[in-house]
Every structure is written in structure tokens, then in C-alpha cells.
Amino acid sequence: MDPKPQLTMKEVSNSAELHPIFTRDPADWMKWVDHEVQVSTEDGEVHVGHVYTVDPVSESILLITQADANLEASSSVSLKLLIGASVRNVKIISEGTEKVKHKFNHLFRPAENVNLNEEDLIARKLKLKSWLEKHRLPVTLGGISGQYLTVADAITVQPPYTEDSCISTNEIVLSRIQGLIKNMPVDEL
Image 1 (cartoon, one colour):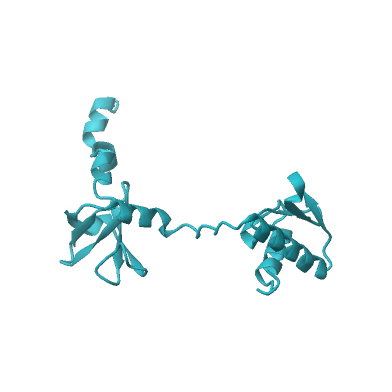
Image 2 (cartoon, one colour):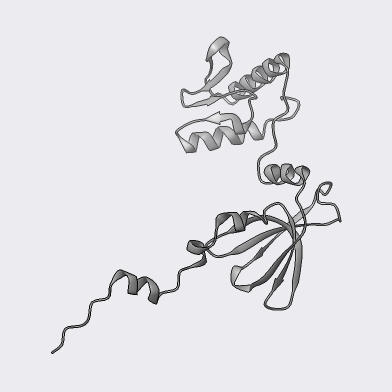
């Protein structure tokens, strides 16, 4: 019996095609991000929108399209995922502006808190403390000059004293206190 011939690494690498992720420069993918593009797919459809991101492994493109003609001013956008295997051609229609980039950077992030002055923060803290005590929860002031509310030694509420500014390692207690804060009447806040 003849032993099976051994393959060298060079022969192995030549025998298999490399995935484009190993041969295509990441800058090639990034050149589409934030730009308005026209994408042709294998089913003959043409999709127009701004590229939010590209997955270099699957070669899929995430397009953002808007309800009106101006993405910068549009408040309503929709996402369209174009699977990489169906993409045939990508053509840049226009360069992305700074306003588009700024909008994309804030599109999927929570709204930034409005800066409250010191008096409003103190009033909000005291109202929240009163609301929690009304529900028979022990609340103490902590931190520098009493800026934090500590509830039952299990959760800390930091400024601006909303359900999103709660910190705790006990997720059950955290969700219950967040629910209480969320359901606090507006006149209490």
C-alpha cells in the first residue's frame, strides 16, 4: 500500500479560495458608509439610500431610507438590510454630509438629557425621595453633599434622578424601583 501523499501548506492555501474579508481592504467597505448609494441586487431591484454600515463578513449593507427627500431634515427613517449575496453593484450617488453623519451617530442612542439647573435637580431629588418614601421605601442621601439617593441600601439613584440613572447589582430590585420612578406622576416630578 502506498501511503497518502502529504499536502504542504502552500498547496492547501492554493486549493481553497480565500473569503473576500481576507483579500479586501477594510477601507473599501468604509468608503460607502454615510454616503448616499444606489445598490443593484440580483433580483433586478435598485435600492437607494444612505449606508449606515457594512458587514465585511457577509458583505451585507444596511441602508437608511427616509420618508421625504431630505435625510438631514427627516424625522422618519427606515432601515433596509441588503444581504451580501444578493448585491451586484454599488454606486455612490452623493457624499455624506456632516449633518448626515451627526444624525447617524445619534440615531440609535437614547436622547440626551436636558441639562437641569441646580435648583431643578434639588427639587427633582426631593420629590423623588418623597415619592419613594410614600411607597414605604427607606431612602437616605449619600455622596458628596447628598447628591445621591440610596434606596434600601440596594440601589443608588444619581442625578438627574430618572429611571435610567439607577444603579444596582440586584436586577429585581432595580427593575422594581425603575418602574416606580417611571410611574411617578408628573406633578410629583
